[in-house]
Length: 285
Image 1 (tube, rainbow, N blue to C red):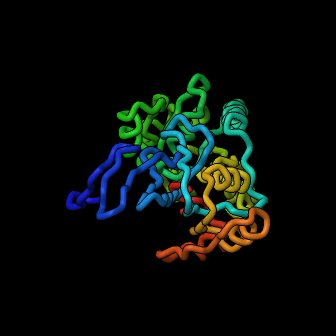
Image 2 (image 1 turned 90 degrees about the vertical axis):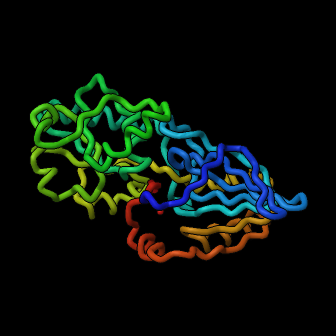
Image 3 (image 1 turned 30 degrees about the vertical axis):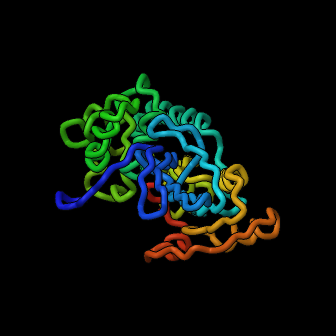
């Protein structure tokens, strides 16, 4: 954020008054510290979720359901095709892939966003299999997760000094931008994977020339979105950032709710979705 940034923090659940509105923050489960915003005025409650997921994740605070009258939800993966497997299943497959690569003397490299997704991947790895390396962009953020008590395994900064330890035996977590760079070539031969909800669509894996795609998202899937909306008890639902029209139509026609689109106030979303680009931490991490 820069040294000049003015940042006031607020513990989860603590209320402050801004004019006539009572404001509080509640865990969104997207990544460490991510928050929903609850606003109450004259007995009416609105909740703005930001990005969120409801799956259990040891790398961050669990999602908190906040009852409300009006619910403003994201819709990054608001299509019926997006239905996530159990995270435990995904990590079991990832660790097995790592073992198989070891048997072939291949370095396992998992691409994941440096903030949020990378730390979630690290928490799911079996460090008894071998050494775990991280790209510098990931290493820069890991100390903050460790300081917050999140169970990250021991890691090595992946580079020239650790190349011989990691090559052929280790698993390295790196941002997708590291693909096809001189940095990654020092660990060859390797097998490449990406951890993202976008891996639900096989064409995304092929376009990125990946050996494996692990379906692991820091956003709610189709069923998760619907279940959360119902559980809030909200009668009005605003939908933003994603497949807004699809979700609004479903909520109106199938759920009988007063649903409406909330336009996203920044650029890039339309291009990202049309290209089915990997999620950010969780526009996925």
